[in-house]
Picture (spheres, rainbow, N blue to C red):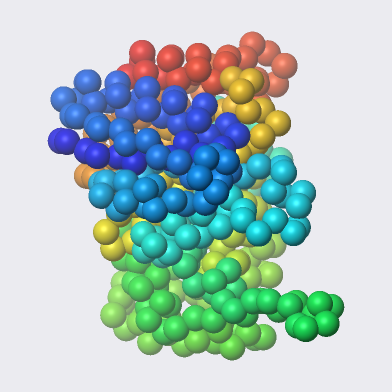
Length: 351
């Protein structure tokens, strides 16, 4: 297979972890006789520094003309610490999602047998966890009308959803549930928010089209509690943009490290694959960042191209590295640790 992949390393540790994913994908391409054409492009703070725009038109053209996007991370403290900044790296991410039509974030949460005791949660609560949170990405409060009143003392952010936006994310949720345990949870705040009542009403209307799927409806505050108490009670969870942003980070502690969890943002035409961690600027350039989430994101990308054997090979070598203790310092617990680049080299060699 010939693949054109846009490569957006971004900021902070993004370039370092992306490099390791490229090593692993190139090893896979060699082993399974594929050809991957990597197409680098700027985004985030790096793009602001270069051209003044966090998601330049040139980057969009590269992404839109590619088969998929492999993405590192964006963000820089100088923007985080400046509330008055008019241009921010995160604006590029929102713009990219909107322009590429990436309306659904697919974030799996699972445990690694060799690392289960590194989780802050008890083994008996999390063992065997295997769930997916499907987060709506291009609507809701992040894209609604916002501003300050004339006196500057009142700010507002508006959460708006159309039924069409809810239908398309719900459809993906139901279809995903059909490939798994056929359980779907609609996470909302329908007891308070009108937008959530639209969500719940839409899901209820669609239930009849998927009679094999068992559907539950839960308020987001209750889910925030139950997600750490009984994560095994969930299979596929679908929720709006803001709630999904929070719940997916909460779910990441189940595995024991944010450096282990991959994700995908998908639409009707193209997918973007990225680790869930941020740019971690304190570690940038030190060759200490955990690359496994980015490598596993690349596995998700190959899976979506129906390259199931190749994706399985990546997941297998990641598990092998964990079992063998070929890990970065965040997972070494004071024992021997390896550099980011060394982990990437080991994974590629073992492919």
